[in-house]
Amino acid sequence: MALIGYSFITQLVFTNTLIQSIVPNDLRGRVLSTYTWALGGFYPLGSLAMGFLGDQIGAPSAAVISGIGCLLLIIFNLVVFPSLVKLN
Image (cartoon, rainbow, N blue to C red; front, side, top):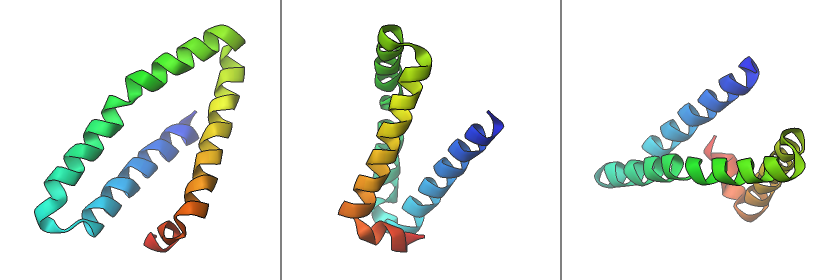
């Protein structure tokens, strides 16, 4: 559980730092506010979907499906946007 929490916080810090270093100064506030809105605004929708899925097929199966979905999204983004790898 600690590794999951550490990974989540590291991802948030990395994403925030990346946005602040790439976005021009005059747009930084707008981009960060949109990022914050999207990040915080989609938590309830994800919780609702996971709650429904967990109720239908069980929490462990819902977590596995969610994890597979996340991995597929990562692979999709790396294929469609190969320049993301160079941002590191």
